[in-house]
Amino acid sequence: MSNSITRIFHSEGPDLRFVKGAFESPGPATVRVRLRVPVLAGESPSPLERVATAADLGNGVSSPLSYGDWLFINPDLTVHVSRLPAGEWVGHEWRTLAEPQGIGISESRLWDEKGPIGRSLQSLLIDRLALD
Image 1 (cartoon, helix red, strand yellow):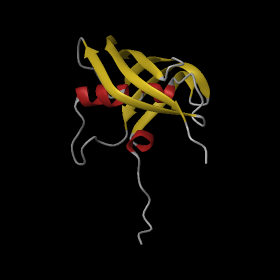
Image 2: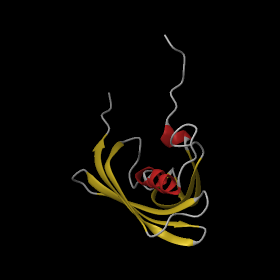
Image 3: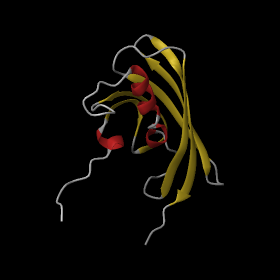
């Protein structure tokens, strides 16, 4: 039996700096994100990898619902950029909308140190967590 600890990329890979909002506060959030670890071991992340990886965190930082009670599955992510980001940090202004039918969407305005760079959209399937 192994005594190793499983590392999870979404909680250990990105460095998040909240400008507005917080994990504990439901609702919209403005967050600057950079990668602490590469997407592929031994390779520096490309500007597009930095944008896409950070954009995938949207519903995690701007949920209007409690994580203790709800499960979020993001089946797709669309990222549109007008230019590649400058520097390591990618800014996001995230907002997540959840509907009673179990669907939702997380949207973000993307920016860097020079200004706007694009938008991201993440579709969501939402369900109550089954409590044993």
